[in-house]
Length: 513
Image (cartoon, rainbow, N blue to C red; front, side):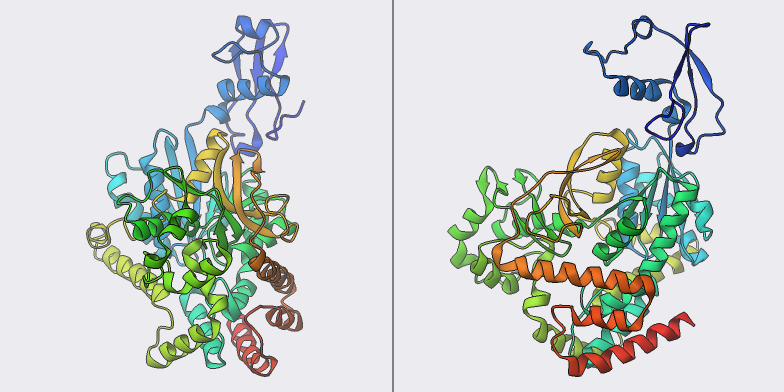
């Protein structure tokens, strides 16, 4: 008899009055021998009871037996593989894992990067962070992808194919032709998708061989297109992660001087990644947030910025459609495109770094590498501390997802997943950012209000555009990628887009030679 986790279910041996349990290959525990476990009076009665004495269904009985007696369920070691070593947020996830040892009892942390030195640096940082000093975790650094994936329970993908330099190059090319872009929208995001989709699909296909039961946690931009590619072309279970949606707590703290961003704030939101809004029932101390905003509108409208949110830019959008954007107000990239493109072009002319956020991350990685070479890695934490790694005031979304899957607790979290009834009026099957209940065997949609009327067209246009980009990235077809570029809402001039794409494609091909 086959179990739901890909192995033999416990078999009752009548001749011995015992249950015979086997290890389940999907958990990577085939080396552990099968064991015989004495049968209790509950087993003899034909059912297993929970602590409160309720009889369980047949499926639940088998699941309970696995948890109690099967070697793979009883194993305390959980292998978590981190792919990519350049983002400080990755270290924030490691820090939260180490602070929750009651959940992640004996984590085996594997850091993989195509640059062995960078993988070694991140592993050294993980071993020396304050939360690891009392009870150091098992860590390993490697540049062997197959070895890193083998037997993993979770694969945390935090890669940037081509590195910061390729992204900055594409942004500079776009800015010369009057187009704004970053790693999640615009011409630079299209080229980043073309570079990244083949790599992520290769990772997912290798997971089918080395860790078929593992979850792929995608923390790499552009999240939406990568989730779409993995979902449509592989059977690997995956979820897109973005902590920005939870940064609204910081914005609330700045807007209303709440003092502490987390307490008494209960909110939900939805849309597309970096193009989402809070739902109308979002409340602070049982009062609707939008009502609070309207009550203090005259005062709030005069503010320039609120925490990480470009309040001056999004305030007209809030007033126009009476909804509050999430994710640091990325909507401004679409509604203030020309102004931002001119600003980026000016920055590119004045400096070699087109984007300060990317260059700061790159400098932090270089600083860590230098300290590692000098055996002074503790100094990194003294200088940088953990606030640079902190994802949001609610904690790292990836760790929350892993915890909910591991405990099968069904926690409600906002993640990126294909739209199957999650948000009405958005493209069916397109990855959306929406609240779900996270279970071990999948994600259960919560269901929220439709996207605000004014933004429905923009969201669907972006969703269709992203689908075209994924299809073009699969074939690496030049014409298909240019067609996808012209479907991007901020690309409104064929006269400028055509020569810009010629430059982008030439750089793309030269990098692949």
